[in-house]
Each structure stands twice: as C-alpha cells, then as structure tokens.
Image (cartoon, rainbow, N blue to C red):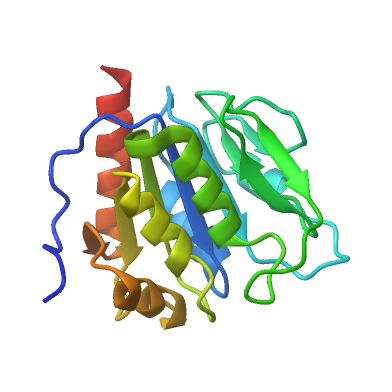
Length: 201
C-alpha cells in the first residue's frame, strides 16, 4: 500500500534536494512556478543533462521564478533563499559545512551529475533536517539517495508514477523503500510550500 496521497503538516527542514531526468524541466516548472516571495528554503536540483552541453537551466528558471537561481559552483555556500542547479558533467555534493563540492568521479547510473550522489551527501550534511523529492525520469538514479535520506531521518517524497511523464525513476524509489509521500505534482507543490512555511517559523 502506498503512503497517504495527501500532504501532511510538515516538520521543519533546512534544505530540499530534488532529482529528475526525462520530463524533469516541465515537472520542476510545475512544482516551482508562481511560488510567492519571500522564499527562505534552499532547493538544490540535479536534472540529468547531456555532457558537453552548456546548461541554461539557471537562466530559464530565473526568468520564471521569484527567487535567486544559481548554477552551483565548487565551495559556494548553500544560501537559505535560493534555487541551485548542478552543472553538467560534474557530480554535485553538499559538504558538512553546507558548501557545495564538484567532482569528476565516474558516472552513477550512467549519469554525472548523479541524483544519488547529491542526495546521499545532503543526507550526511543535514540529517533529519532534509527533504528529498524525486520526480519523473527514465533510470534508477535517486532511489538509493532517497533511501539514504530516509535512513538519516529526513522526509522523502516521490512523484506519483501514474502522473509522471516517465515513471521508471519514481517506481524504482518506491520499490527501494516506502516514501513518506507519493503525490501528484500539485500535491508535491503543496508539501513544498508547507516545508517552506515551517522553515520560516
């Protein structure tokens, strides 16, 4: 039986990490577009992109959102009010001092950046004060990372596979552990707003 498909009142977290692959740009825009300012919760995203291509994700989302948007850089501190994207061709980690780290380690699930790498490092950095969202995608990347967040006591949320453009990634995560929330994008958005509200108070 899948978890309750209604967002429950959220406890306080200090960061949100999001992973997506095929169909992820559209899903992420649906999750974030029109969120009212002020926004005070860092959101860090790995979206699978082809290596060797310049990413324009920061520019695309900066034009549409009411929050600062950045491509994460090595040693950059995680600011409390921003959206960050992993640059193409590098794994993105969050160190225990809450700064970003980039590496050229081998791909994970054929992906660099890897969702698993980001989520596992963020789970180590934030422990129970972390929420992980996994959206549409075509491979198993993110299933292990979401499990690591769960084991650290964080909140785990997965896009309902029945709604996802490509359901492989959400289904892999659900098969690996029972997420706290399995929700349509509209309900994931509600959960994200609850997390931000709890963080701000």
